Length: 157
Image 1 (tube, rainbow, N blue to C red):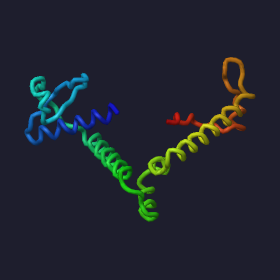
Image 2: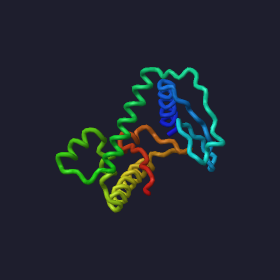
Image 3: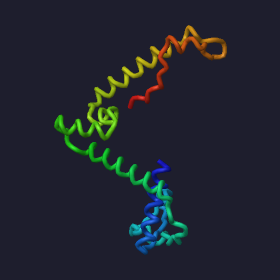
Image 4: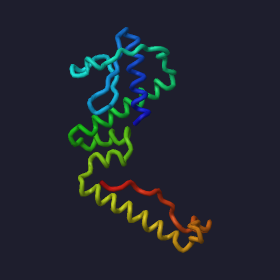
């Protein structure tokens, strides 16, 4: 999140210099710092003008930020869109991962069932390693020939 915020801030600052506008910094009532080219009325007194120096962004970093922005916008559009027809959902699955699309279209019960199934598989894989454990918690190498090594699933919400 910090990287995305930094990239966005960099783009805002760079574009502000390009257009000759001023950039302001202010702190809201929750103590969060904000930057922008316009100030909310409630913050006009506390806002300070920022002097911008060295606002050039390396080309690879700019391209990466633009591609992330396009990908994030696409995901947001898909999440907000009504349920697509089968041909549209095939096209969408090409641009996003299956797990992302399934998470967007699944009901809460389906997500809980899928999460429970992922945890069941993870617990079974972990139990497979138990006979191969040695003192101190290490695992004998032959365990990896017999047991599936799964990444711990995310916590269900």
